[in-house]
Image (cartoon, rainbow over all chains, first blue to last red; front, side, top):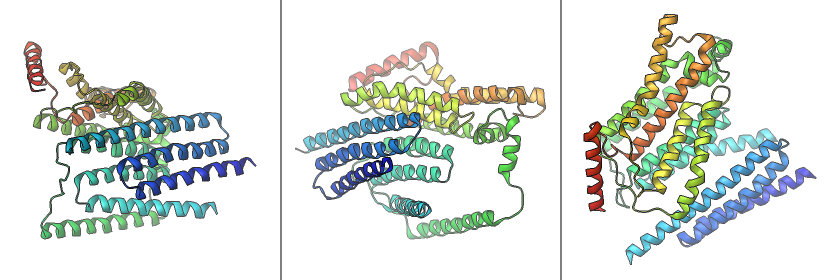
Length: 95
Length: 328
């Protein structure tokens, strides 16, 4: 039961990663691509992390995984913001 | 079933690594090459982790992908967006290719030979047999700072020489004009975290993966982040202190080595009872020096007021500030 739950979480996480990657390849411009990537990474990683925590018996390792998720989420949000900000400024320079 | 999945994972990993390595070398756009190189470094870290070499994985992730990536990105910063990799003549290209091929064949032969060699001296057994008297319980740290401490001393010398060359060649690169408040906000809680992690890596190196190079690189990453987030805030570097920090690693290393030579007749031959403490002292000093060196390398040259000492130094500093103020 527990294992099924974990596998379900991990695979739904992978689905988000997949759709994020497809979005990165298929969407028309930088901003929509960033949108797809950041959203998919956050939710996808959260679900994968959740699955791994369920499978991992040691509580301390679970806490570590949560910290990793929080750090990646912060880094992903900030870097998306920085890329978008840079792109906006470049656009303005062109005008 | 599990083995099969791991094999698929490993094969995919190797194929991805080779593809990334190839595209890094073959792409014509400099920025793209650097980005691909960073991605390749991260993938390589996973490969090291799969080979059960967590020390190398850490070093590759922090230094290979992180710091080298930052150095390369800052080096190409002033290039125009469409800079292309210069073309080499076909003769030189042919020579490089055949040399690389020869090297690959030689190394493959060496690996193959090493794997199939049944008898002979296995170094790992010797490492483990001497571990109790090495002062640490992490075999990698034992090799790096006890058995082959001389090599590590020379590595530090290489880092120092490289940075001294950078300092000789250039003034510090121009800063970015502005930074995002969000980045500043993140930096405020990320930098303390990086400093603590660096201290942890330094301390944990004695019995688990970690050590001076990883810790120093992480500290340098914190400095680079500060520089990126607060480009307009110009700290008054105390250059005298900076110079001391730059050489304190090698200085401590040599000092300990000479001290041990006076006791045990051999350079860097540690007395087993003190080895743990001595290694920690050396690693702490080395961490500081590596962090300083990598930060200065990222800045790309001398900070203001690097030359000269004392009163002259402060004069130069204030003058360059006025110049910068006038220009900005």
